[in-house]
Image (cartoon, rainbow, N blue to C red; front, side, top):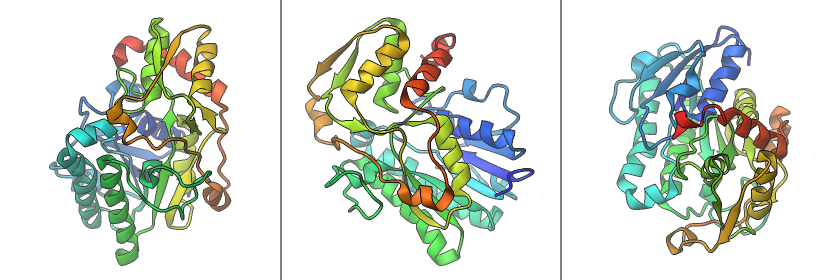
Amino acid sequence: MDWHGAVVVITGGAGFLGSALARALVGQGARVTVIDAFLPETGANAANLEGLDVRVVRADLRHDPLEDALAGADAIVHLAAQTSHMGSQADPRGDLAQNADATLRLILAARASAPDARVIHASTRQLYGRPRALPVAEDHPVDPPDANAVSKWAAEQYWLLEHKVHGRPVVSLRLTNCYGPGLRVKDHRQTFLGLWVRRVLEGEPFEVWGGDQTRDLAYADDVAEAFLAAAGAPPGVYNLGGSPPVSLRDLAEALVAANGGGRYVVKEFPPERARIDIGSYVADDSRFRAATGWAPKIPLDEGLHRTLDWFRPRLDRYL
């Protein structure tokens, strides 16, 4: 897709992935509108958008009017979501409202104001639950392990239904663990790695739960490029992975090495987290790579260095 002059709406655009995507789009000449409610429990941070020539609409997808913000959009990238797994367990109705109902309201508003916009939806590998085999391809059974995965599954299905029934081009990317500049680091509501980054920069030990689980982490700029590439992919569901898989223990060692020092302690999973943990996960994203030519460019070590270097002078603004 030629992004020069294109009108693109990013929901959740003040988060670290949304802002990385906004930077990439602005760099290609797109006219970007960011919709974000800036809820304190999410990854939204106004600092992520500083210096970017984008239109910012402060709106909550659950109840605010959306038609004006969506008017004339050529593409909609839907990143806004509640992502905390334990938060979803504590408040499943709130989780459902933020993910499923909010998505449905966005879809209905888009029908009225942006009927021709193509959609790229941010989904999650959490839908698969505990993998039955690795790597995980798109035909793996969906087996949500927690309330958050259920609500994200519903959101994805609403978008896919929009394609089936109304013919709107929709691509849903089931993301692996993502990280990079602008990540929520004050706690582990968004991802465990955010809190690790905070602790290592503060000179405090961080906790590794388990340690043997593997992950294939994706750097924010690579994910942004994947969303751009997805606009040209045939409609449907695609997995999105990242760097070669690494155990959490080895990831902890890599983070300490990238920082030039640090400490961590390995602990057993807290019982309430163990019940919803999916164990090891590695994405088979060959279908997406074949459809788009996309491949991650940032190795894990480099991505960790970039993330730490970016946060060092800015950490206080993210706590």
